[in-house]
Image (tube, rainbow, N blue to C red; front, side):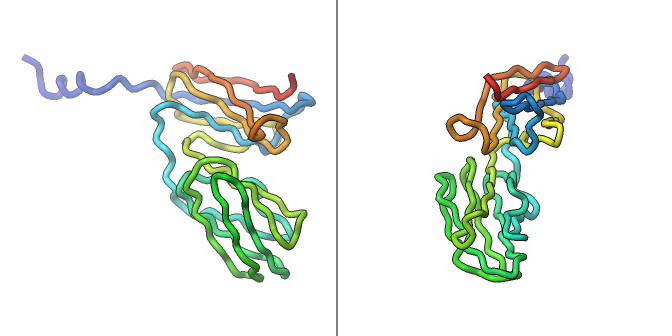
Length: 194
C-alpha cells in the first residue's frame, strides 16, 4: 500500500539543486570592468516582481545612479534634485518617453514594461546620460570594482550568460554565451578582448 505522503512526493517534479554563480568581467585591456551588467537567463526561472521603490535622481547635472537595474513592470521615479530644470527623455525601443521640463524637487515617473536597455538623456543638458536596464531574469547585477558579481540560488542546468556595458563594441553593447551551471555552482571569467 502506498501512503498518500509518499505518493505526493513521487508526483513532484525533480527540483534542480540551487548553486552559487560567480562571474568576473575583464575589459579589452584585460583589467576588471566595474559597472558592467551581468545577467544569467535560466529557463523556467520566475521573473522578478517589481517590488520596492526605484529611483534615478538628477543631481549635480547627472543621472544617479548612472545605470539602474529594474525588473519588467517597475515604475521608476525621476526626481530633480538640481537647482536647474531638466527635460528627461528616451528614444530607446524598449521604452520611449518624454518628461517635459520640470524643476527642483519635482518628480516624474515612468513604468518600464519591456525588457531591454533604455538610454536616458536630458534635452537641456547634452552631457547628461544614463541607462535603465530592464530585466526579466532574477539574476541581474552590476560588477563591483573588481569586475565581479555573484548570484546565489541559481538552479543547475543550462543558462545564457550576458554582459552589457556602454563600452562594449558589439550589437546592443552586449555579449552573450551559453553556459552550464553545475550542481556545485559556477565560477567563470568573461574577457571582452579578442
